Structures are given as C-alpha cells and as structure tokens.
Length: 87
Image (cartoon, rainbow, N blue to C red):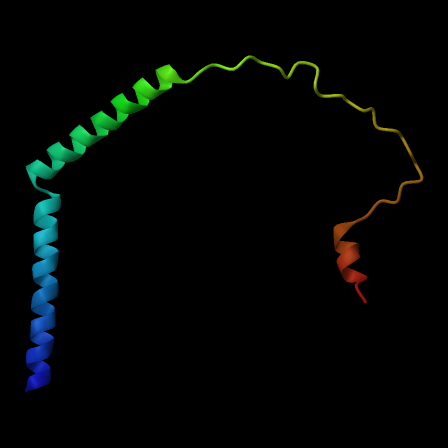
C-alpha cells in the first residue's frame, strides 16, 4: 500500500513540475524577457566592437617558400603495408 502511494506521489510531482515549467517557458512574459535580453546583448556587442582597436598588418613577407627537391632515393611508405608488416 505504501509503495503505491509513494509511486503516485512521485508521478504527481513529476507531472506538476513538467506542467509548471512548460507553462512558464511558453508564457508571454518569458518570451518578452528573452527577446529583450537578446537585443540587449546585441547592443552591448556593437558598443564593445566600436572600442576594439584595429591592429596594423605586420605579416608581409613572413612566409618563406622552400622548393621541394626531387630526391628519388626517398623511401615511399604505404600506410596499409606498414600495418601488415607489424611483427
């Protein structure tokens, strides 16, 4: 008898929780608050972006390209053959 009452109590609590959270989540006041907070965040990002300094580009001619040599003595490895020859 006690177990049935306990399960009934648990199920009632879970259903009540789901009902109240969904009621709050889909309410108009929550939608208004979330929309306002998103607008507020966008305004803050725009204000902060205006204050960010723009750095001068100092990366010209920093990459040096090296020509590959045509060394024919180089051993070619094949991935699958390396796995097969594992002893």
